[in-house]
Length: 291
Image 1 (cartoon, rainbow, N blue to C red):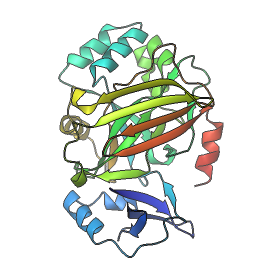
Image 2: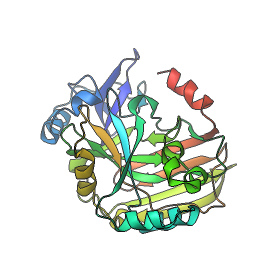
Image 3: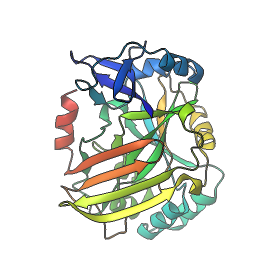
Image 4: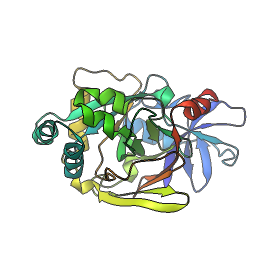
């Protein structure tokens, strides 16, 4: 299994490479955003002609976003998500209408500079009583909207804030520590069917499993191509983007995150994402400041 990665070499310089069998081979581009200005066919050629291996052990894997890249997300794309959003909300009908509507729910999630990755902390809001992880299949998209690869995304959310009023969605979804993306990107040409992938998540507390759930992307109400088409309508992504496709693994209202928890997510054929949980944004800010 191979992955596209963004990494810092021994001098701390960010680079892009292909990681396979613990061998890290640099690509002939300076950044992920430069890579995504190419077509998928060109990206595949760059991967197949990657340079000589560099020591993988000394490389720090970074979030696979830089430049003007953005993370966007889709909501209510699985039946379980629609049910959970109605359960928590004072306005249940709005989510039922979105699930049945022609137009999907799409919302901005994070700029590149605020994304965290594997083993870096996610945060629960200090002003929210109920916060949950949302494990999702993410699409790495070129500047022209082609799917170049797949990532694991945790769309961390405040259920209590959004449940109070749907208009509070930005505060529930967009804050420092609310967006984690796996460092490893599985190339699209190596995934035969993105709509048949197993997804699993568990929450660990003091080393013990307090929640576990699973789903499959066959349960998606809207396919990736449809979501991308709507995102690109009258919108520009000159450095590409990540689009998270929604969740079907939703902890119960009494199973929210606590500081010190660890969230583990796995998506078959794609990869994994592990995130410790912090209260508030201070610990996340410290991590971001080191980049």
